[in-house]
Length: 213
Image (cartoon, rainbow, N blue to C red; front, side, top):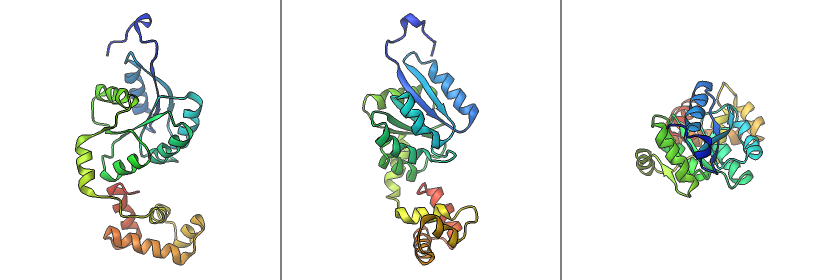
């Protein structure tokens, strides 16, 4: 990855937005990708809430997003980018290689899904490939996703499980989602049954482990 003299660099470089909440990881990725002669990191953000605004401002060709971010998740941001910056291709890069996350990423319009333990050369190649219109998915994870089947939880069941974390009561969840408490209890009961757990906290943990939330 030797940096070329400026006069030997390509006239057009792939513009990349990087979303990663760990400062050291974000800086290292930006540095390594910047050493590629055809890639330029034009924006770096540490929260999911900042992704869309940064993309609208900098107009990246590819957005490289982590999943677990403060505020908006990378998966939710990917869905928004499809509407707000439709020319931007999304590549999910995460520590969490879970089949459920892969399915949700593809549903959100992501063009690729890789885990973080790969070499930077592989990441640079994936950026070029998604920009060229290809889909790039970790092959081991792709097989696991096919074996795991679809997410059994409905959107509302996911909402109530997400709302139940951090000690929130049924009344809290109902108020936040503008639902009746009985409706929230019904959704929680259904989610508990589908996850094969004993209570809503176990259901939320299992759903996260599977990548369904």
